[in-house]
Length: 71
Image (cartoon, rainbow, N blue to C red; front, side, top):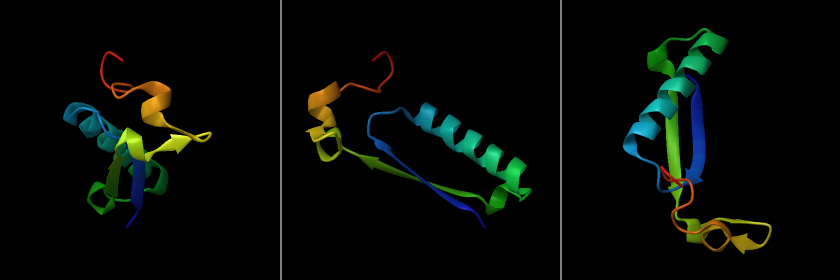
């Protein structure tokens, strides 16, 4: 029973998340030859003010709208 955890910044639409879990599930089932029902995908979303790279918060590096549709 594969479990995949995806950690990402908040802000993506429900439709984008639906596509993401569908594609991840497909790759896992094709690669590991397991049933789709056996695959669990966990989406952990974080506020950009709680995520940093290179010593700077993402909210400061990219702005609050970064990663959202049209940004």
